[in-house]
Each structure stands twice: as C-alpha cells, then as structure tokens.
Length: 171
Image (tube, rainbow, N blue to C red; front, side, top):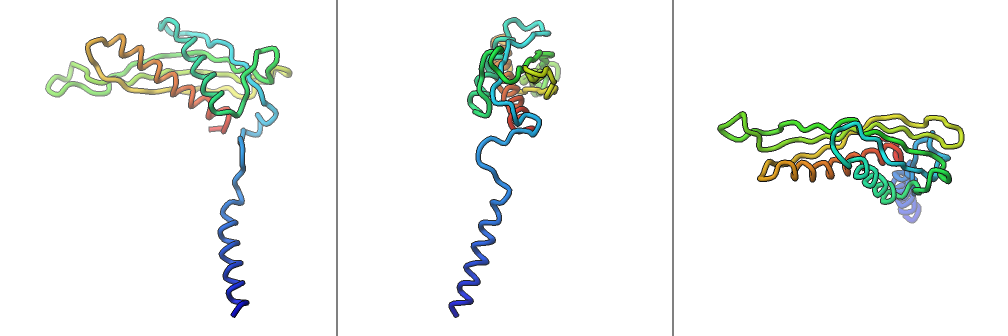
C-alpha cells in the first residue's frame, strides 16, 4: 500500500514540476543582444511638423527602458549600444462620426510611427533595425488641438512600450 501511495506522489510531483522546465527567472533578451547590458538613447530625430515631440518620445522611451529594467541607461561614451531613432509620422484618422451627420467626426485614432536602430557602440554593427507604431484614440471636444496634443503623449508612451518589448524580449 505504501508503495502505491509513494508512486502516486512521485507521479504527481513530476507532473507539477515538469511544467516549469522551460521558464527562466530574470530578463530573457534576444540572442543577438545577449552581451548588451547598457544602452545610450540620444534624442530622436523628428521628420514631422509636430513641435517638440522628439523630446517627448525620447523621455517616454528612457522611462520605459528604466521601468523594464533589462538595460541600464548610460551616456553614449560608456554604453554598450546606442539606440537611435526617428519619428517618421504622426497621423490622425477619423474613427467614428456623429450619429446623423457622417461629415462630423466624434472620435479620432492617432498613430506615432518610429524607426529605430540599435547599434553596437564598439563594433558599429547594427543589431536591430525596426519600425514600431504607438496608437491611441481621442474624442472630439471643445479644444481639438489640446486633445490631439494629449493623445500624442499617450501614443508616444505606447510606442515606447512596444519598442522596449522589441529590444528586451524580441517581440
């Protein structure tokens, strides 16, 4: 009887512990970024007509990388890699019209497109070149320009989250 109970306990323990076989504790960086521990983030270039958005995007990205904790932010002279980027587009598209008047808009979708390059500072090798898009939506109210400016902040934060996921997790 003891043998059967021991056998059942061993089977249950093996099945419970076997589910954790593929997991790792700590950051799981992409293989090509395994040696990179520190990153420099110079201010992004702005190809849009939106003023001062480059500082907004850069600050959002630095905060997100620090929050993620996979990489440490350092100056360009001390970092293992440099993350350079360009704000390519900020687009506003109509998402919803007012009921009864298809020409009037009640909600917009806003996209911020970023192209970034992660370069090994020592070798000059481009480790990652990709595009990310941050999105948000906003409703039309009294001050459309102010609402759009606030939506740009949210879309920049979304783009920063997506970019950080690409460099820290590979997706």
